[in-house]
Image (cartoon, rainbow, N blue to C red; front, side):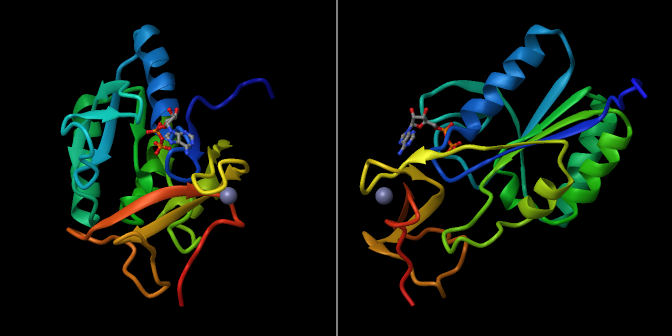
Length: 196
Ligand code: ADP
Ligand code: ZN
């Protein structure tokens, strides 16, 4: 009864600017202080500040292994973990990874590892983003962070607003735009805009 399973999955989600990276860094710094072996993975496509680190919007950072996000990349991540055998594994921007990451994480948890995934729960349309819905359902611990709405600057933001050349994105725009002039804001439900 009191023999708790060592492995666990924690998910930290929310819109952009809600403090997910900050929270991941906070938790992993504590893991570092406790002397446990850990690895942080993050996708190559999020190179907003630094190629080899997780960096929050307020410039806190920790070293990370940068990966691709497709099915083959999941295999690569598996190999890195097999080789390094960390006790704790963190994944930032989990929303960008292929669905296979879900089964990979289940395996690590069953082996007794602590796994932390931070990522956007929804895309700019308000739909489940990549594997995040599945991970939220399977998690032992879930934290849903909020930002401050960048439009009304009043309510809590639960959504990510995508702007293309300063205008709200259309529902039909691709989820991940490479090389476009798009930007993102945290918005409350009332201020969130999506063009048809
Ligand atoms: P995320 O990983 O969720 O995108 P970060 O951890 O990188 O977020 O950054 C969170 C930090 O961003 C906050 O602590 C704050 O300093 C800053 N920030 C900028 N805009 C906002 C906003 N609209 N609401 C809340 N925090 C914001
Ligand atoms: Zn608002």
